[in-house]
Every structure is written in structure tokens, then in C-alpha cells.
Image 1: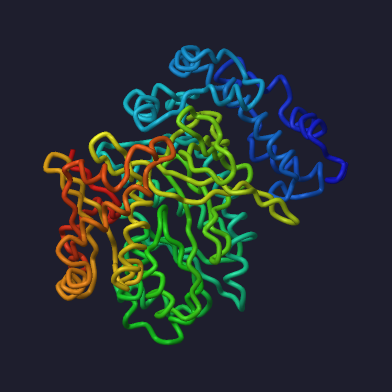
Image 2: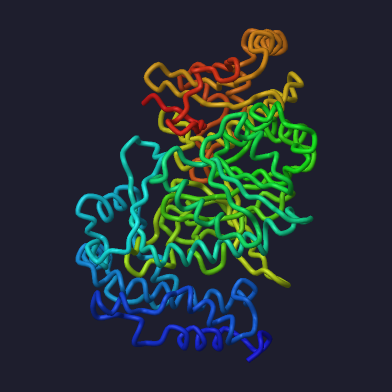
Length: 513
């Protein structure tokens, strides 16, 4: 069989051969523990076709992933809690097609807690069988603890798959040159965090690099690490990556030149911070590594010149869905939903990660074939003005554009970070921007805009940030009638007025209810 021989029918037949009927609906927990690993099926697919799974035709990838989804539903139905949940929504067996799969209800953090904390009643293979790892979230927005359970065997499979992918399709092009090559991570204050265990697990499996799980580092430790000969890549949270020029002030020119890849965690890195990084480290490329508690590697930016994230083929099903849980079209924005494909023992179907993504056209070879998407903001990044909802990401972009055209000041270039504060009871919406000269910037903007300029700035920008579903309900006049006051506030860098989570993340929106 050659790759050119494969069509959709042949792909479906091959997927059924790789996951045969008798494995599609295991009859007992013991049957589940004896199932061949999905990682092994991906490798077998590569052997049968003579092509690495990551480079297999999308029809074949889709057929095998769907066959796996059918199997995961069959496995989940063995568990009483999952069975009750699926039966309630009319799911009694393996879905016949993706339309039926999309009838499965979306899971959220509450479902995750019910399934995998306390009694951990959502586990198909009970915890007392052993061989599991419990991982905690270090950055939950609601401050409540959140845990997930993994089979160690399946976790190791995913580390190996994702690590090999990073080496072959991402880091290989940036860490070229003589060995040794280094890959550091500064994630996690303690190792129970998902960021410390799971991302570190992936990075430690990238071939032909030396891995160091450094944890939070001081300036002397960074200087010591960067004294090692060879090209270097470092992965950390967005705020940690933004601090590297400051933290590395004492680095030698040779050490600065050896830094080739700065990978930041989920979210976005302000343009000002990108400029500072590239000015300080002359050879650095900046890439996004998108991960979550339930998904150690959701998407990777493969090219510093393109913001698109690529899913690792065969690792997760990544869905971008509308409010009904149905796939959006290419170019449309939706909710990010992930199903871990390596989860026989601890399935969690269709988990909302709390992010908005734009679905992008898939990479379709030659070489790598993979689904792609682009970060569009957190689901909670919404500004509520009375009954209307505005995208905070679009609102910031519109405000930035109008401020730049009116005053010549570009917030992306001058602000270290920005944050909206929405005081709903007092009806005041403020955009806070941390800048080097807060007083001087405030005076310059006030002089350029005049006494009523800030209000006009907001009322003209906000209508362009309405969602697709209510984009006709407001214009500048309607926003004037909301009774809201608007503020543009400049504060010094690291000001406590800009609120951060316990792990140093800066939410775009703080909502006062």
C-alpha cells in the first residue's frame, strides 16, 4: 500500500484494521488494562504505509482518530458516572460520524472536578490499580483546586510523541549548529503543577538536546545556565519570558548570541516584550507553546513568522466549536475543546480549556500534515456593558488603533502589559497600561485627546468589538447611553494596580461584577 493509493474508503478500512471491532467496546475494566496502546497503533500505521503518521494524508489521520474516538466512548461507557452522563444526552454507543460525536456534551472544570477529584469517580480503571499520576493546575482562574489523573504509561507515550514532534518539526530548524544543544524550562514552583510535570515531560523527550528543568531562576542561575557552550532554547510562562532581558542583564555577548528560541506559554506576548527580547538576544526566535492541565501540548507555533499553532497529529482531538458545540468553519473563531486520545484508563471527553481560537487551514504536506488554529483570547476576555458583550481582545485592538492614529502612541510598543478593569456597579471601564513614564505618557495623551477625548476614544472603538451575534445592538450613541464612564490609566511597570494571578499571569479582564 502506498500513500497515493489511499482514499477515504481505504483510510476507513485501515483504521478498522488498526483498531479491530473486538477492541472497540471493551467489556470490562480488565479488558481496558489489556488494550494495546494508541501510541502503538500510530506507529503501526506508519509501518503499514511506509510514512510517519505525522506525514500521513489527512483522510487517514482523520479516519484513525475517529476510530479512536469511537473506542474512547466505548471505554467511557464502562464507567457508571460517564454512562449516566452520556445516556442523558442520548449517547448509548460509539458515534457513527463526527456529527454524532458533537452531540457529546462539552466538559468544563466542574465536570473535571467531579470526575477526577475526591472519589475520582470518572476513572474507568480505579486508582487502587496503581500506575497513575495526579497533576494539579497552578493557574485556575477561580482559585479552586483542580486535579487530573493520568495513566503513567499513557503519559509517557504522549511525552515521547510530542517530544519527537518538537524535535522534527519545530526546534530542529532553530537549534541547528554544533552540539551540544540545550532546552531549559523555568516552569513550576512545585512539581505537582501540570506545567512542571507535563510540559517538562515533553521537553525532556525532545531528541538530541540536553534538558534542564530549572524551575524559577535568579539572575546568577540564568547566567550560569547560559554559560554552557551551544545553542539554547528556553520555555516559560509569558511573564517569565518577558523578564529575560532584565534577568539576563549580566550575560556576556556570547551567551546572548547563543539563545536561539524563547518559547512562551499559553496566550500572547506583547509586541514591546518581543522587541526587547530581540534587541537583547540578537539570534532569538519567539515561539508559542500552548498547553493546559488536561493537554500537555495542545499546539505549537512552528514558524516565528506565522502565529498559527499546529496540533501534534495523534496526540489530541482539537476542536474549535460554536455555542452548540459544532465545528466552526475555517477562518471562524470558536471555543477550544480538547479530547486526549491517550486516555484508556482516565477518559475526559470534549473538555473546554477556556480559550478562544480561530480555525486555520490545515498543513497538508509535502511533509507534515496537521490541523492548525490561532489564539484569539481567553473565553473570559469579555467586557459586559449592561446587556451587551464585547470582545476584550478586539476592544483593545480597536482602542490601540484609534489611540495610535490620534496621538501617534502605540500601546503595543510602549506598554509592558495592559488590563481592563470593569467596575459594573459603578459603571466605569478602565484600560490600564504599564509604561516606563506613566506621568509623562498620561500628560501627552491628555494633551492630544483633550478633555472629552478618552470617552470618544472608547465609544468609537467599542462597537467594532461586538460579537458576531450582537453586532447590531450598539453604536457610539448607544454606548453613550449605557451610563458608563471610561478611563485610560497609565501606571508604572510592575504596578500593583494591574492584578496578576498567583502564578504571575496577567488576565486581560478583571470584572468587578
